[in-house]
Length: 182
Image (cartoon, rainbow, N blue to C red):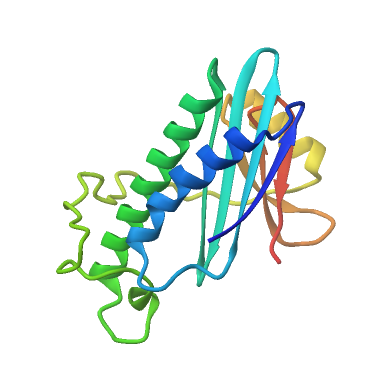
């Protein structure tokens, strides 16, 4: 793997760089071939809380994990690697269930007979509730107001300007985001 490690409000020391690379190299065992994509790592410190955000682009998907509320940078790194391992195992289980044909995303990950054994995940994907509703055309500001009124962290609406379905959501920093069709 190639690493792009940068710091926000923290210098990236050789010790931190080595620790991040050592821990993330654990993920290599889950892949057939070495990853050619660049792993983006951002280390940050805000209000005495250490955080790390890792993004790994893969063929057909993106792995991303973050840990931002820890007092120790090394503990944050360990937690993010654990999260990424869980994502990979879940992703592999999904691939093994749905994509049985050769040449698919399955060829990206090692087989069960390899050095890595994956237990079945307890997290069965089950839809427990379905809602249907009519999308009212509105602007982004009105959608944010509606979302706040109902107390949700996201809101689906028909954008009055673009005539497409959009989603507004509340970010962890308290600001708002907008998801549009691409």
